Image 1: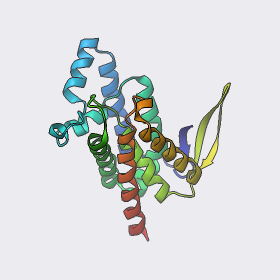
Image 2: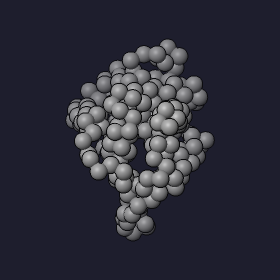
Image 3: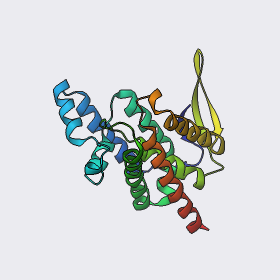
Image 4: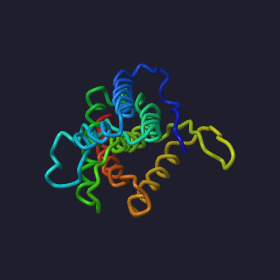
Amino acid sequence: MLPLWDDVTKDWRAPLTWLLILANTAISLYVFNLPPDGQAGIVERYAFLPNLHESLSPRLLTSAYLHGDYLHLISNMVFLFAFGPSLERRLGRISFLALYHLAALAGWLLYAALAREVAPAIGASGAVSGLVAAYILLFPRARIFTAVWLVWFWRAFYIPAWVYIPVWIAIQLAGALNPEETEIAYLAHIGGILLGLGWGGVARMRRR
């Protein structure tokens, strides 16, 4: 299920969302076009390493702007495009930017605490997961225009956020509980989700 946009935002002027998409895309495309040894050097220098020594290093942020391949980049940027504009307008630019980066940090810290492996980790998935989690608390009645693969073809239609996001979170939990089945750092997603739920809950209470 790939979210494309929601039915909340009618104004697409969301400068920070577009800036984050641009930054992630530009950095990742630059790295993708390096020779293999250059790519390895970037990962070695800027990826997050889940050990105590690295837990408070700048890698917590630099790693969130790197991606493993085009699919990894595109999927994260599609989620950012789908949920970012409405959140940016609702939270305000400073709060939105803080949520994005703190969710990335929370994701890597949980990954560092619980991961069984010490392989370098990269990607904006923790940050994006925080946005998705905050979204369900701030826009529970929204609908998400979603592309779904139905065996032989894609079909796109609106799905209520209160259906889409809990199902998506359940998928992340299932992945985190079975880490040996995939190379995806689902624990980082869960860390971002937890931060996002807390952030969204506080923002919702302040709005009342």
